Structure formats: C-alpha cells, structure tokens
Image (tube, rainbow, N blue to C red; front, top):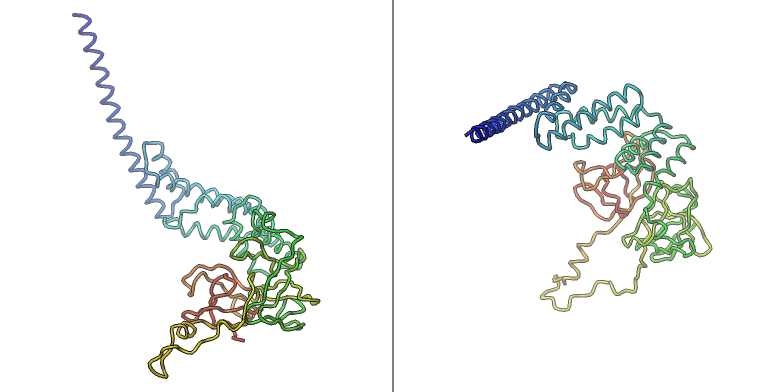
Length: 367
C-alpha cells in the first residue's frame, strides 16, 4: 500500500513538472515573439541600439524565425561599423558591413548604404589603394568593386595610377592564368571585317602607322606593367589578352608594331571569298520579289564606330550598362577619350562589340 502511494506521488510530481515546463515554454515563446515585434518597431523608428537589445532578448527567450536571427546580425554589424567610422578605421568598417548584405529590404537598409558610403569616402586615395589590395588578397570582391568605383571618380597621380592599374590586373586576371597562357607561343588575332588602324600609341589621336585590311593577321604582344589595366578573355577562354585602359592591344603586323583597338580584333580569321555575296532570287513571282537570304541580309546590323569623349561629359565619365537603358545596372565606366565599335542598337543605346555592355549613343559621336 505504501509503495502504491509513493508511486502515485512521484507520478503527480512528474506531471506537475511537465505542465510547468509547457507553461514556461509558452510564456517564454510569447515573450520572444513580443521582443521581436518591439525590436522591429524600434528599427523602424531608427533606434538601432534598442532594436539590437530586443532582438537579443528574443533570441535568448525561445525559438525564433531565421529572419529574426538575420536582423539581429545586421543590426550588430551596423552598430559595430558605426564604431569603426568614429574610430576612423574605415576598412574594418567596410568589412563589418559585409555581414549586412541582406539589409536592403529592411528599414535599416538605407542607413546601411549611407554608412558604407561614409566609410568609403573616409579613405584617402592611398588608403583606398591599400584597401583595394587587402580586399583582393582577402578575395572580397564586393569591397574591391566598391573601392574601384570610388577610384574611377578620382584624379590619380602617375604613381597612384600605375599602382591602381596593377591592382585592377590582379582583380581581372583569371585564377588559372598559368593554365591559359604560354608566353612561348605567339598569340595570333585577326582584324575584323572593317579592318583596323595601327596607331603609334594607345590613343586614337596618335599617328596612324598604317591601315590594316580585313582579316590581316597580327601577333598580340605583352604590355609593360604600368601600361595595361585589364585582361580580356575570348569566348573560348583558352587565353587572355592584355588591354590598356583605353581599350588598345599592342600588336605586331609584319615588320610594324603599334596599337590596335581590341574591339577591332577577332580570335578567328575573317574570310571573304565572295561566297557570302547576295544571290539573285531563283524563283520570284515578280521583279520586286526577294529571297529569304536577301531578307536576312537586310536584317543584319552594320557595325560602326563611335568616339566617346568622356572627360567632356558631366562627371567626366560615361557609364556602361548591362542592358539598353539606365534601369540596367552599371557594368563599368569610361573615363578617357576612346573609339568603340557598336554592333547593335536599341532605344538609343548601342551594344559594344567587346561585350562590356551598352552605352547611351546620344553621348557619343558617330565616326
């Protein structure tokens, strides 16, 4: 009898404990949800320290949604980056803000973006170059690209410009460069269907040494370390071509050496044996009839070149967009005077032969 009473007593205690835990869990869960709601309201009001504390309580108080954890991390990153800004530790602040990449859709999103700009502006040109070097070493391309956009808008000394070009090469060089090149094997390209001018320097205003005919064979030469800024990969990606900031390659054609616009070259030869000439329609019902081949030829776009004088434009640059319009993201900027080849048009925008993107034709002069 005593054993039965003891057993019943133990069961009652266990039941009370389980019930108490359930009640505690529900209360705790309810408290966590409440803190998360209050935290979001505080974030909307711009009180990020209070929001951070409340989300911290919510995380400690019970199971919370993954979004709440992300918001907590974003708030923490913003507050830490603010401290870095006050301490003038700008690069560390930019690194910290990398933890807030998904902030754009939140009430704090605009302040995160403004803080990133403030941190970037706090860097001197030398600081920016140091930061760019560190970002490349850390393989943090998000920070590297942001710094590049800043540097593209600044006047650089010759020494700074040389260092900047070297860093840009490090950014654009493929990781498997050694597998894609062989300095002992000549790199042969061909002039495109429009031919090309062989310039004395990497500038379209320099002397023209000679005019190259369509399909002429040229050997791509290596450039000096201070001369080239980017590497262009053809579609087959079997090698890269060094290109100057103005878009020129150094080439040898016969006994002549000079510079040719990269957009006027092709990794494959151009054949013109007359086989692509328009044929008369074999069966046309009247003199005005046209064959399908003739219609296709009419639809083909005739490429042409334009001159971009970026220094004369507002802001001293012309943006290259990923598509035909300002709504498309910026793929790069042109800051020099240069000649470009257009292979397509849409809504007043021209598609670049280099594949870099689209430019606004109203800001160029057709050659």
